[in-house]
Length: 283
Image 1 (tube, helix red, strand yellow):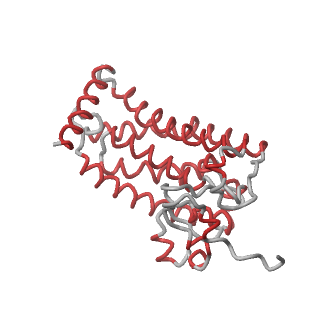
Image 2 (tube, helix red, strand yellow):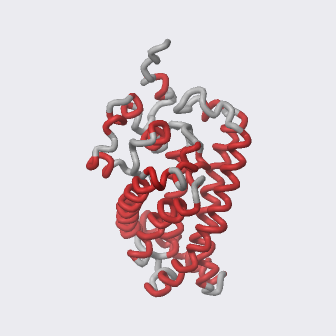
Image 3 (cartoon, one colour):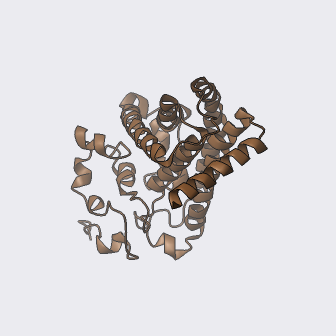
């Protein structure tokens, strides 16, 4: 009964929004696929940036993964990252929504007045995640090829200890091929509803921000996997880690303390304290 009531609430809210926008599909698409995900990204990263810049609140900074790094963050590097992230969003991500809009109109389901069921959204979410894992893993490994790394991917790896906003700090070509297309492709294949697209884009942006944030916070997904990639460069190329396991590109990670810490933190004790790195040889 509760699920039915909740479903009715969202269905009613969608119809009210649709009527308020007078069925203007382009505006609805821009709000759902661009504005809402951007607000999710910058809202989440705004909180992290306060911690990165000020070192407070300690509730966040005490969960730093690479101890002593970005403490505080280099202001010059930070502003460069913010500028690049904004440029990638406004001049690459948003324009890429134009062809996506016409693909979604061709499906004739993106702006349906009937919302998909929550169960169907979970199915779609699973497919989106698998598609993203495949496309991101192989495109990411491709830009690590020496010929491409120097000219394209090296920019992203200027941050060996990343922060959240660095998730979309990348060369324009990389932002298209590795950051944006892997996330957009799933909904275009499935002919998804704009509400599903909006939720997926927001989840993807917040999740990649968590992966780059540099803090292993309680109850949030572990960022140890991708943080290790920035630290070691030739490990942990994917999102889920499935393809890394199949291709053996996580062997060093699995032998590290970071792998032991790669879990959801269910206590208030930082994992850097309960599972510390072994002392360095010169200590």
